[in-house]
Image (cartoon, rainbow, N blue to C red; front, side, top):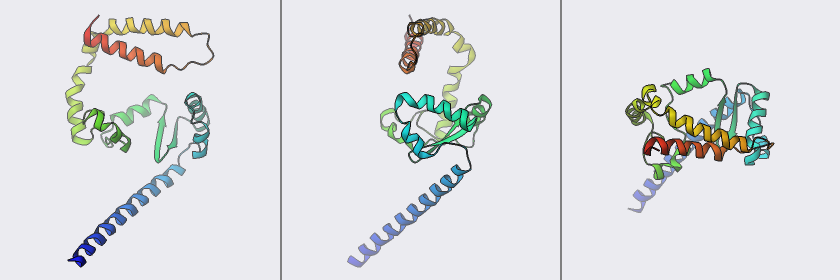
Length: 186
């Protein structure tokens, strides 16, 4: 009986080793592929990892490496596209619609929805949601969006003379205002 248990454990260890080797080989291919693409070395990201330095650094990367470049964020190779035509190709592609493994972190909190699902489930959810964003439906909310945009512009004008401004809180509040106004009314 012990021999059967030992064989079972060895088989499991062997399968785990095979899986690990496959993952390493796949990761090695990604690393080799990344060397063919323009982008900063990993050490440069570590120097610029401070929140207030990231955006200016990304703009420097755009100037230095061109319209398309890659950056390693930990174990993830992230592609940066700056031209609308390139972004359109990626977003309209039906080839790669799977999510990064990073989405697993928010899946327990958000559940299996449009943001976290992949494949056929994502396509089904997307088809259900797409009509809600049709131009004619969004046109109904134009006045609300314009009113919220006016508020956003006023907030920006209050900090117009400041050398550097983190716009994230402004944009977050703007998005929240638009969502609340359109969902619940004035």
